[in-house]
Amino acid sequence: MQILDGKALAQQIETEIKSEVGVLSQKGITPGLAVILVGNDPASQSYVNMKAKACKRTGIYSITHEMPENIAQDSLLQTITMLNANPNIDGILVQLPLPKHIDTTAVLEAIAPHKDVDGFHPFNMGRIFANLAGFVPATPMGVLSLLKHYKIEIQGKNVVIVGASNIVGKPLGALFLNENATITLCHIYTQDLIAHTKNADILCVAVGKPNLITKEMVKQGAIVVDIGISKLPSGQIVGDVDFENVAPLCEFITPVPGGVGPMTIASLLQNTLKSAKLRANH
Image 1 (cartoon, rainbow, N blue to C red):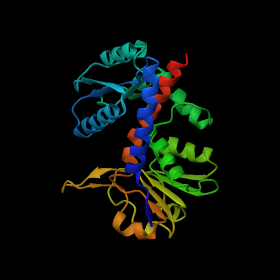
Image 2 (tube, rainbow, N blue to C red):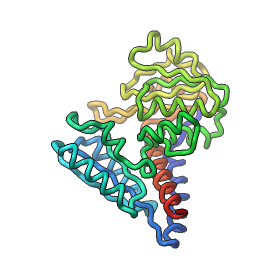
Image 3 (tube, helix red, strand yellow):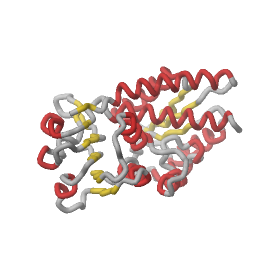
Image 4 (cartoon, one colour):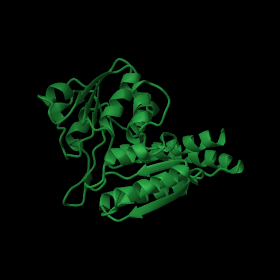
């Protein structure tokens, strides 16, 4: 059993980004990321802080627009319009989830596709499914980068993804399909989940339910990527996989924390850098 160390790889990626940011700054361009945070959800605040720190480490300019929970949708959209027009901002990221009274789709669609570093705009989503270049959502992108770094063969493998969200499950499925894997996408209405997971060469889980995947659900020699993250009442951070009991069966497995999480932030920075490079070449 080998650990897929996302933390170490993310540090390596950050070092590469930092040197590329240095090259761009000699041309007078500093990559810029704007984050919009609505309300005061502790998990969202923590993610935004981690993103800001990562920007600082790599030399990317970052600004956070903090907005009250009861902000009007129009005010939020006006801020996005302003950021779309700002030539110094390469990436715009709206921290999800948004409060109930705001139409998330309208907000995500308002972001200019060439600044959509989260890859959630239907334009970029469509390009993933068509296997064209664009911005790939950070978590799926991070998962693929991690598997490729460890030289894990994807072509021809049975990949089972548990959790079919627009943010992780669906785009991740498309990325695996583009790598010529066979995809099974499971969700809350899937009957007999174990029949699918037991057949997985590569099992990816993104639900946010602690210990959802037990050792009975995983075949010997599987590769398990745990994308879920939850905080137990004890304060312990855990994933969706019963790590202790599942790990001995696996060829490779990601830890939580230290697996996919750091890769998500590294991928977001890669997207921001990519957008800045496009600006530099215009």
